[in-house]
Length: 151
Image (tube, rainbow, N blue to C red; front, side):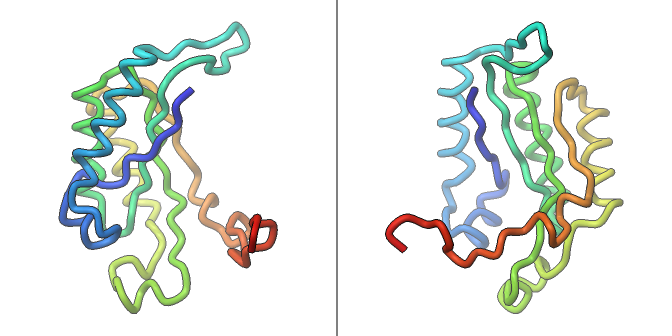
């Protein structure tokens, strides 16, 4: 099973938030390879995926248009060859709002619902979704490097 992220459709957003203007092209080349190696999801009798490609996409605050573009493109390019995982769990870390004011808040229920509805209306048949509670403090690790080797 390949589990990969597809963060941005927009090269401008990729540059602004990750310093990687060519992110969409590079990520799609890697995703092409994954889908070539496992062209269709396969499930066992227990309903669990045994082979396949899952593409995670995290909705960012104010990023609904880019997320819709990503869903439209991924579904159009790969269709049922991938399973989308539409994530709502974005949580701003301290100080991020000072550098990127638009990222200083969580995703709203309305933004996420609109993305999920868009995916369904676009014909996406296989996707994982989240509850907004996935962005609660109890799910966020302390990022204190405890347990990191060589740290």
